[in-house]
Image (cartoon, rainbow, N blue to C red):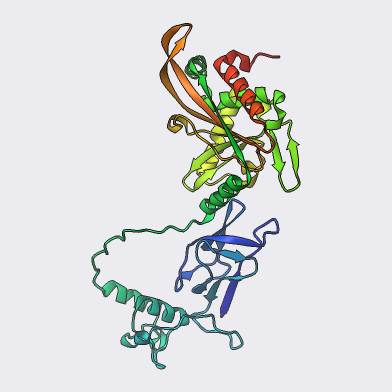
Length: 385
């Protein structure tokens, strides 16, 4: 019996989804509920499983292709190739002339297709199935008896198609860079006192280890009441800027699949250790591909940091529809002039970019200078106004 598995609605009325990876091939025997394919929509990857047990006869689409909801994805034979009389056969690629089977050879369409793909002449085989039918095990025997040849020399070029999350990232970055006029600003910050405080807290408090990020978020939270235009979204099509009182901080996180931005919600209500714990929790969920849509959306301002790999400066791309992004760079010891004498201090450049359509350069500079004051004098991070 022939069965066609069509792409179901994967949620939120999505009209299409991208094929990310196939887990079966034509000719494979699959069990009911066996994983067939991964598809992606709006950052969420969904695993599609088989509704029936049978043999795969056709796959529709390659990784990177978009599949429409309701369109065929996988076709099966569910009873060793016996097809209903009124059901049309699935599309099968023409067999090469040298492997065209004679009319006397008994084999299911899936076996014929697999033999064609492998270059096996069915006329040369004696089937082990009922009435001499050639089955997949017969093809496996041919493969096992075929001497292995030396691996070919790797090609000098290797083309990699962008698919799944990697393609979504590329599209979002391109769109943000194309539509947003970025204004960049970099300030040098003396992190010596803050680093001494951070080391002391990590050595004496039995809590989540503090990185620099919770302190930077705390500084952003303290500064935003005086610069509400930074904690906003800009709908350029409607020409509307929406400012937010709550601070939902996106924390750019590198994963094996690419860059994700989990969101620390209500950052203004969290303590330093609560911020550290939530950053660690979200980073782990993102890196293990467990973060859900709610944890990956809704940010009002983003912080991106490469830690020791942060370099001297950066020009990060704004996470649209936000209007500002902050990028702490690496902390390094440098000689600086302090009170008329040269001394070694722990210095860090703080890079940032702003949507120049709604953020003036002077306001961006004042905002960063406020962050500089808070980070250089960390007691101010907890001093009430």
